[in-house]
Length: 129
Image 1 (cartoon, one colour):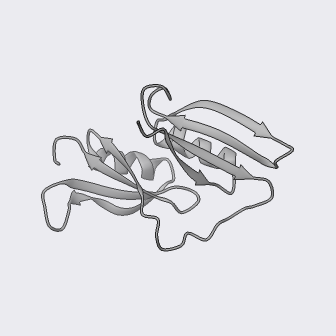
Image 2 (cartoon, rainbow, N blue to C red):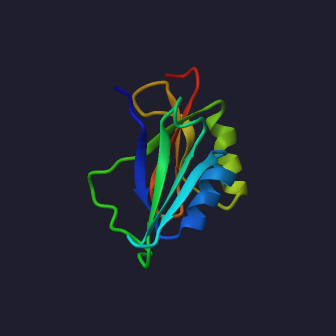
Image 3 (spheres, helix red, strand yellow):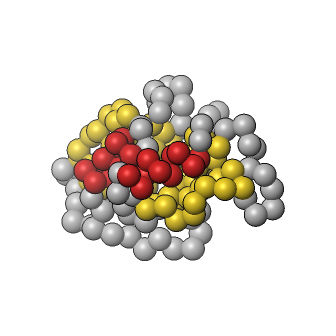
């Protein structure tokens, strides 16, 4: 067994694809529209679906936002330099929710940014965990 993907419901597919590809550097792997089901799926990631876990962005026609709830946490991405990654996000107009720095009870360097739909993305600096 292996993990294939995580799915996020998004309110604007183009805006979300732009964030994950242009700001976070993922590639769009495939996109399929299902008009009879009134939804579109886009898969993005850093590697192929056959070799890595990817992110499925689901757009349901006519739904512009979702209640985040309290159970979901975040997506975690390893970065070479969390400080630089935060600067890149800010320069692209993105939101940094927690600046890069050591976690409260440890030495792992982390940061949190937010995607256009309000989902949190954690940056974890390579070599610090």
